Amino acid sequence: MDAKKRFEAFEMMCRERACVAGEDEKYWLDEADEWARFARSADPMIQSPPLQLDLLKRDYR
Image 1 (spheres, helix red, strand yellow):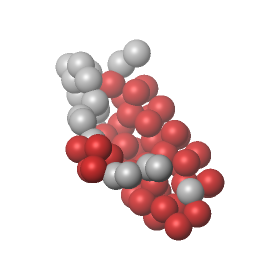
Image 2: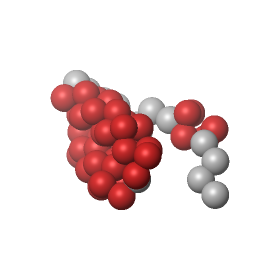
Image 3: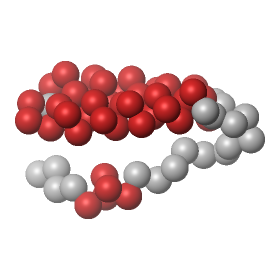
Image 4: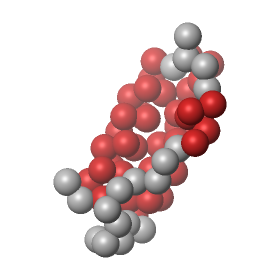
């Protein structure tokens, strides 16, 4: 799967999470917008998506 398709898949996943996220909806919509921006500017030479460090800090319990 190329980078653009991966970014589009991440965008779709974030939008789906936003639908069920309740109070975190804005966070997931912002993430989706970021992935959409990456998809629009994806260089075919990109091999992997950027690591979302802020997701590692969140407590999802």
